[in-house]
Length: 348
Image (cartoon, rainbow, N blue to C red; front, top):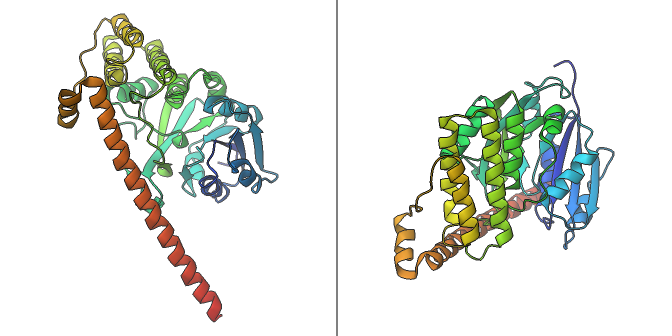
């Protein structure tokens, strides 16, 4: 490229005071230097906003608002973005230092391009060096239809940070749906994919998704979250069928619904009826969710609802233990590095 288009990096945050600095530094240290960073604090109750303000500069804009949810915060950030490309970054995730520059090698005019750029990503708790990269069928160049088919058939997902979205695609896709509180990113990026001409996967570009919270729907989850998921599912299916109405797209859409059925099964009869209605519109029907042997044992012992809740509690305990242990090792490593550096400085 002979020109270096402006990239708007958007980070929306809520109560991420301890994690936000690492995310911001991963942006400031990018090898691609023509960027602006827009941070929107969505009414945090801790000192997230004050910490974000410490990084404010001519190319780092910090905005605060009353708590309105992630989608509203992202839309607010978009209203300030001036870039030809949009890089999304959640406040607890990280970008590899050359992430943007690697993707921009395949970019053209952000005002005209309908090519959507994606990247690889690794999952981690605290130690980025221990991130796990698990390639799947979305990690390749794909047409929009094939991308959505792969996602639906295999329940694959990509994190927001993988995407570098042209200005034209951003405008075509429209704003984030502020009605959604769960799977809002899944719905939004299905829409962006559907608006594109092709999805270009850039293997050498990397980002990191922090598994910092257990976010699985459970019996205690709000009805709002389940309604949000159902609306997201319906919109994603509509996006695929708008591109191609065929037996394979209907079959993939049914699979997509079947994979989410456990979140609705034997919970709210009205929502269960609605997801079954969606299946009927696809000329199919959903079947009783299949459980692993552990979940099936819990179902036999406690019934469907309580069994699912017990399994969710056990998974959360396991997850929390893994996160805490990795944090301990992370802080221990940093403490050792600090001691070594202090020793070196004292001998100079």
